[in-house]
Length: 546
Image 1 (cartoon, rainbow, N blue to C red):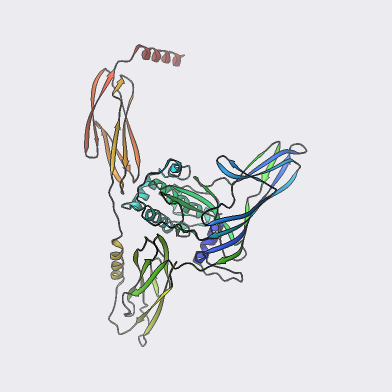
Image 2: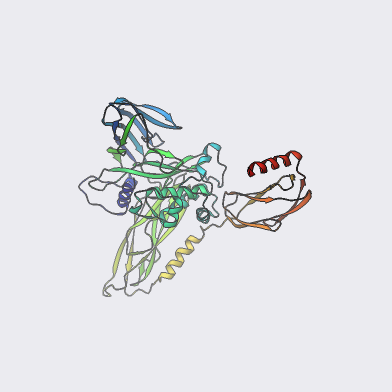
């Protein structure tokens, strides 16, 4: 899976020359393909035969809104069952002799670009239904309860009240911060490890994104499937991993932080499994009386037909800060992107032709229905041009789901128009500052304690804190008399702080509770222990001594 992801990443970054037919999956709207999975099992019976062997195959193309599966057949014949709460194809063999046994699954699939059309803002935070809550909790390798993961997600999410925009920001942050590293092929690393190393492949990109999303209350799950690569001498399709986020009244929306496809995926993404955890099981086996070894599950996908005419969802326009500049001047190429549709659209824009570009070329932009946004690239005209000539540069800009645009820049040795790098950066910063959000925490506190307790017996005092706001409270102070605790209460966070109290003599005791800017006084009545309690303690002490 990991090597395949690198190949697709190279596809998106490099122009490849090959005699084979190639295409950019991001510009493809529709695809038909023949899908196959296969593997083999070698058995060594303890006696002459192995009484039985069962194989449960959890990996197979799944019907989605964008993917249709036809004529699915298996060899040998298998039955679609439910195993451990998951659908699986059950292959069975009986009375097997020593040797190798093959199995395969074949289907015809029709896949279109998956672009869920979210027509209105989904308010964040939101209540998560019980059947979805499993996708908000931490798991072994997806440590969404880790403090550093929570703090990172909260900094990205601060002030955001739009759940779709929040998922976009988290995915785009992961894409920008994590470096693709083939050294991570051999294992799936935990989200905490990826946050520390900032390195990984598709599993790590997806896992960190899921952990960040869950840490602020966005339900997210792991998806395994296949994607297209066009490098020569390899299978056109290889394994890949991405993620999906659940939104109320919308459902599951795909986010691929490895390849920067946010809220949509190209049609070469073929889902074969989704899961609460990373590394979900693809195959399980059961057998009796013998040794069994199995090859890794392999796949082959052959494209039968495709279309590459994407809809023009976005209108774009470009212009220069200065159309004529002096040699060595910096300049800004601005692009306005307008969503002409009534649903959210993520588009990517980049310069296909320009003088030297300062900073990242590709810009990822999320547009709400009918929204307009302006982005800018800082470019630099060379200073060592021949002063005898005028120079004209043709700049070309491209954007997904939009028509390509061009503009002309003249470098003139006699021009007095000069823009410094600092001035260009200031203009870019000013244009982006309006989008920066901060938000505020919204803290509610519930106190739970026993009104009566027994002397010399610990009693638990609980302070339960909920943050329903759009920013973390990084140092929420809770005190029981002189015992104090500073807590990090993140967005959509629920934290319970317990204090243990115990008194040695009977009577009514008063306690002072301080949290935030509030103070409460409570009273607990400590009663003498009953004869039965004292007898139990005495017997327990005697038994422990013996």
